[in-house]
View 1 (tube, rainbow, N blue to C red):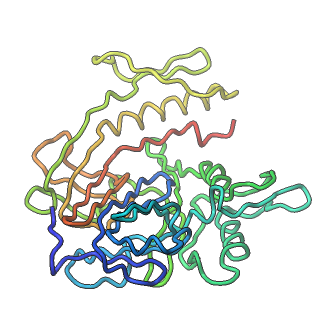
View 2 (spheres, one colour):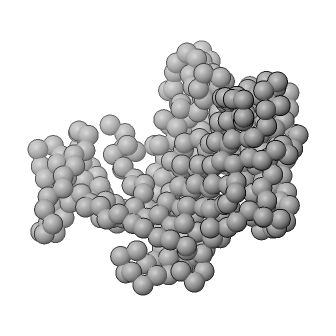
View 3 (tube, rainbow, N blue to C red):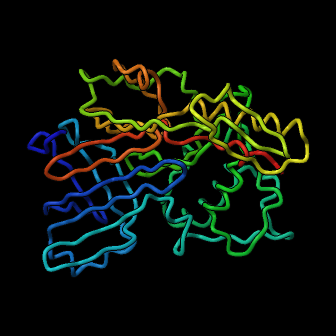
Length: 343
């Protein structure tokens, strides 16, 4: 746990104005295409006179002891509550302008559609024409296509939620060159000095070079994990695939009906192999790498063989105020390959 003091003090800005009153809260980076959120409580009754909805909010951790030029979080106020002692704010990252009740909508029909456009191209055009028409709300310099690319061809509907529509297409992008290690893509936000940049990221192989190495000597203040019994039996088209002799008992799953028996069998085998690879939900409270991105690979250098080695960061939570700490969630997400098969 890092104490916030004269060499380690966060700074909060709303609508470009620094909030000098005391504040504390939590930033949640849940991963899996979900919106990053900031919950902050400000001990300032003067804010009661301000209309805060949709105001830009930025938080600089200054965790290194010096003023940072890039915020750990930038987004928009989505709700707030005033009391006679403080103001509580909930904010979401810039992707909120693409989803939900206040998000931009799009209508795709046979006469006006995005057929032939990749997800990246579609996002670029929507943001340029419907979001950044007056000023840059979402940076596009880092936007790239998924690998492999997937396309908006055939997508139809009125007043579509842009973000959810894109996600429904993006889930079809799966790199299955390595049969037992399929890699999916997700949408993330990278903060820059001036703008928040949207991007599409492909999962890294767990065997990739880690961004950080954590040990009890360097970076880990506490560690806990929960061992899950992975699936070892898959049912499909009246058939069953089993993994080993199942000494710990049977844990079953089923997959959606696919006409081709061979394709169904391959999918069943992939489901078992992926489930067997990720048996633990690991949480570490760390003293470094507060800026690590979700999806990064880290290495745990610990004596427990069950959790030692490389893991993928699946989520991150940072609390700040009188003290500061960061918790990483590792290996929690399991790819459900059946979501990525055309049926």
